[in-house]
Amino acid sequence: MLASFMITFREGLEAFLIVGIILAYLAQTRRFEMKKHVFAGTGLALVASLIAAVIFNILAIEFEGPREEIFEGFVMLFAAAILTSMIIWMTRESSNISSNIRQKVDTNKAYGLFALAFLSVFREGIETILFLGAAAMKTDANNILYGGLAGIFVSIVVAYAVFKYSSHTDIHNFFKITSIFLIVFAAGLTAHGVHELQEGGVIPTLNEHVWDINHILDENGTAGSLMKSLFGYNGNPSLLEVISYAGYYVAVFLGMRIPQKQRTSTAIA
Image 1 (cartoon, one colour):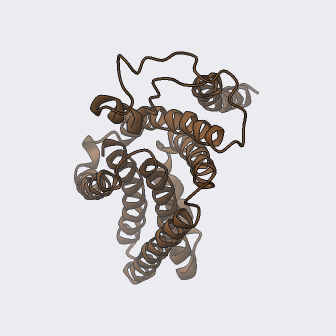
Image 2 (cartoon, one colour):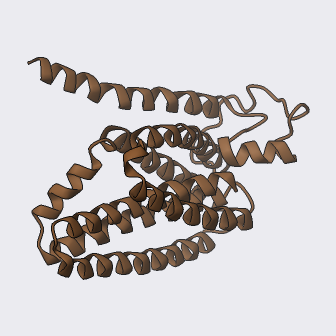
């Protein structure tokens, strides 16, 4: 439940902030007649996201049976990759997101604002569907639903508070803090995705159990299930799962550090 809450909270907040920035800037520049295009793009994006959710569920049902592990494994790995790219992008751009959006608004006409709102919200919708779908494969679907709805509600409240008390809000640090949780969640998705592909016979298992601590913390127990849904806990992981889990953190660290070095060298030049 906490994982789905954080996912919809983060994704919903990004979508509401982007649309809010567009509307606020249009109000500041007295282009009130353009707001209808933003609302139209946002509404269509929500409808398209719902359609995408239905399609995802149909695909999940179609892959039930022997191919279920393979489908779940690829979904988890793909979700982890998209989630990671989103985290890295937001970490770099959160301090400049407002100015970047305002620049896009200035260079776009009616159809451009419609497309900007649609693509911004639809992207967050697709990411939310993918992440929730991957999370639902590891835990109870009802918990995912309740946590997801709560996350959307809280994201609306926080987005409103950000615009009302913007002078007292450091949104850049806020995204940094939530990114830490999402990185840990994505690492668990990566390891669990590898586990599912091993179950489906797509990749070799190598050493099946590097250790087994289920007698201490059972992955199917209450605490173990919670850690499994949040962090991808496995009481008896294979060698490849351990390598993929640790390797994920190395990859994220390099992904965040390499662009910083490039910008530093460019500035010096």
